Image (tube, rainbow over all chains, first blue to last red; front, side, top):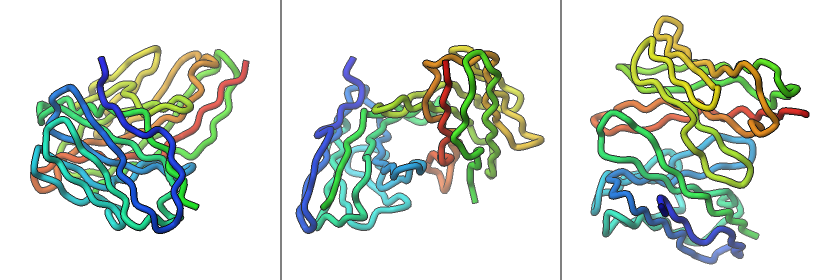
Length: 114
Length: 114
């Protein structure tokens, strides 16, 4: 079972470059999320989506953009990368609001901006 | 607002020692509570959960009881193993303006020595 798949696993960017982190899930989950995890810190929500065509900002959306054209895919785009965006990024998904609330995480994408 | 506070780490224990990681929360309504575990180099994965007051979640020898009167969800294990070394996150799942969101604690790193 694939679950939540993120690519790439590692990436080094120069300041000002742009890139897209890919996320896809094969569980037909409505909810999808992007989090960042800074060293020694918890998770901060960047953006989330409650279904195809619907996205909304989380706690730390500045410098990022998302789209949700299909149920499966939820890419995160970094425009004009900055050193402050050096972090580990996690994509996650959860099933419809059925009371369980479990989040399924990808393995993470480690991004370094130099 | 909603928040989760968990004890700071790192926590270092000898194998077979008793583990407690404290977690308290602030929330309106009736949140569900979770413990997630993150092993080195991996994404978070669900360890256990409780969806209502007095529920006890358990998995892999870990337990936590949803205490509404003390707004707590402390994680315990009677005898830790080296393989339990990981970062543990307490989280609550609750509705804000009709949308369900997670609130994560900052994580507690556990190191178990042989």
